[in-house]
Length: 340
Image 1: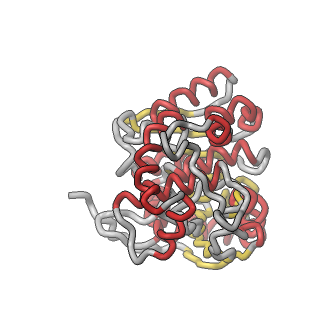
Image 2: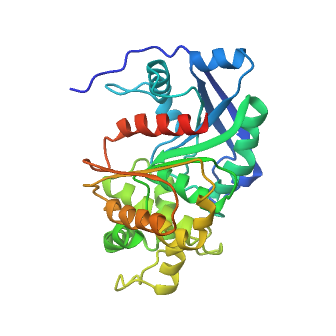
């Protein structure tokens, strides 16, 4: 049985909201978002002495959000508890830990700009970061850390927003779209086609009382389409979601699929690698038994980093895509020490 974390949170824990038109979207999701911040007792002592701290922004995985990771859970450790434990032990330097609500009606976030979901990449750089600088005594160093979709968001925003972010930690972040997504399109199409089109399926989910097991994967694929290939809004498809496959044969539609691939970190690094050279810290890891096959894309991505002589830390560990929160001990320590 895993050990439960009973330790009380002793540092400063605050909740506030940030409203920005950058998050206007076709889903009708709110543009005002809750932001949670945590500073350990040691960090508060440094601030009281007139010192400043680096900032670590946690990007949540799909179907989760920042506030969820700060809440109590049986046999688990909250992010504030983890932060305080690591700082108290000396493994981590004090930081300002930020946990924004980035959830969407489609079940999650890839942290790129999209008219369907909102301009999340720009929001991180031009709304959240300035708000944090205004509220807190930062040392000007900002890191992004996340797992899965959050890890993807961290690594792609380092490339999409040059000179904005100083440190990146990507745990099992989406990469290698051919091995991740292509094998699942037929399954998604079979599920979605019962409701007509992908757009009609999303409308069904928005009005459903509950989700079934298959809904979570199908909704995730629709969210990917909304992120990587948003289509113009029409009367028949007001949200603008279309899957990149032939609805009769499930064959890949090359033009649409190429738009997806432009967001694959393996493709992006070829044209944006120069944006990674200025990072103070770049940490990437993935489980060798990842059930979404992200280990294969991760290995390719790391090989490209080596070919471009980009300094990074890479670890492939024994594990799957699940139950890997313990890896945050490594990335929190790594980023805080590099950005302090």
